[in-house]
Image 1 (tube, helix red, strand yellow):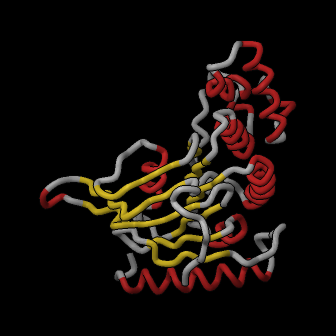
Image 2: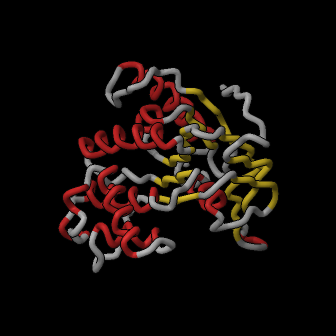
Length: 255
């Protein structure tokens, strides 16, 4: 299965060409990614899925510039922001103070105004003066999202950002992320282990093989938006991808 796209490297938001990433030396070498190629169009929401250890988080780290490919070429058009599974908020700062960390280039007054705007965007307008211990898990992730948006990034990288949330909170966050990504024209690379979440959110789902990570399948999601994670079309598409993942795991001895 593959997705067809007319985007070229010159117009792409993210391009990986034959990228490999190797850790260690000698007998301790671990090949996380192996000649992986992927092109993401501007404004496209791409979900990455695969078995544990297949290199999904490594791929995000490369795109974020936190690591460099061992071989191959990588190009990113524009600014990049990264959001992790854990909110990673500073406990001594308020919600607004945590957002303002990404706004230090602005004057103090402008930082405050901009942080308030972004907290409104993530539906936390009344919680600017609350510290992380006063917020629920979903609220903390909203602050983390606002902090990522404060970087005015063109490409948003998300590493299982909703994995620790309850089902209802995750569903609300899906709706809000849908709206924010469309409103801002963000390019999103979203890592998840949840196949239904990938189908619920993505314009396409890229399935990575077991280690070393390669593109096993690149699947356009043909389900009309808006989507519900519990809808029949989402469930059907997710079932097909799950079958593909199960077959891949069987080929690799259940890893």
